[in-house]
Amino acid sequence: MQEFEVRYQGRPSYKICITNSWNDLADKILELGKNWGKVCIVSDSNVAPLYLSNLLDCLNERKLFTYVSSFVFEAGEEHKNLEEVQDLYAHLIEEHFDRKDLLIALGGGVVGDLTGFAAATYLRGIDYIQVPTTLLSQVDSSIGGKTGVDFRGFKNMVGAFKMPKLVYMNNTVLSTLPPEQVASGMGEVVKYGLIRNREFFYWLNEHNDDFQAMVPETLNQAIFESCQVKKEVVEADPEEAGIRAILNFGHTIGHAVEKLMNFKLAHGQCVAIGSCAAAFLSMQRGLLTEEAYHSILMTLQNLNLPTRLTEIDKNGKIVFQPDFDENDILEASKNDKKRNGNKIRFILLSGIGNGIMMDDVSDEEILLASKSIL
Image 1 (tube, rainbow, N blue to C red):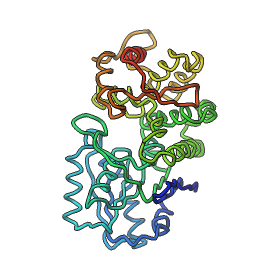
Image 2 (image 1 turned 90 degrees about the vertical axis):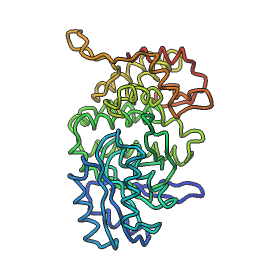
Image 3 (image 1 turned 120 degrees about the horizontal axis):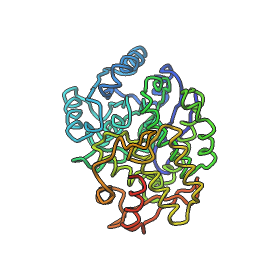
Image 4 (image 1 turned 90 degrees about the horizontal axis):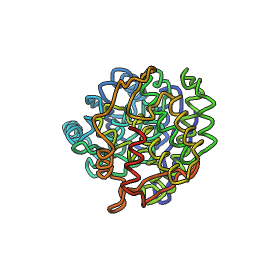
């Protein structure tokens, strides 16, 4: 097991555990030293049939709680909304959950975000634990305490900061992920190398075959390195007042694309496309060499991630073309939450491994960057 702490000045710390079993979860909960009464496991219709019984067996065997319940909602980004949170509130009220009880998020980013938001707001705050089951949620959304739900099609516009008590990753769950979900997670993994760890980015290139074969040791190392980067950034800036914004590399245009595609592309795929646009703009500004730009495109392609929205087959025939253009992407970007006043805060690259925040990106530049992915 790999284990380390996320520590905040003046705030409680929490552990991140990376392992290949359910066996240690009960012990890790006991180590927290909290006397919770009831626990509710929140999951979705994809994950619950696979792993809910494992988690229930683990908790019931050790008799850690006086009462164990579950709440399962329909899987999909379209269900990460206030209506679903209300249903969870109702479940907790009906089962008499109070502030001394606990929630466990068992699932991907949608489950983790929704559970965390409910934990932040139910009875003005109860404790929760993250048990992420996708590569993307393991390296991204389960760490850092950002919770939220989508509002009328606008991604993560309603949310709160709520730190988990524990993040427990059992990486055997990754074996059941479809290839596109593994690739989606790699969209965030590559981001960490691009913004903070040049050596890690090139290490990803060297181990491409291992990722295709889902070699557990290589996946664990990629997760560990990604979590280390995120840990360092969120410790320095828990509530995104400054440097934490670099974690949004690829997300400004990525979120715009995600919304315009009606969430038909996975989040990590949209981040990859947004990363290409941000890298293109970095190159146009002279911050990134053309060689580095093409290295980024090649790395993403090798990891089965898209680098543009238009799909062309081997004969040069267009097989898919989006029904929106660069103007639509610009407009959607302006509705994103990553704004600084009237300006869109954009994360660019001053070389591979060095993400920088920019508040002076013009509409014309965003249009140009958007054209590069169309």
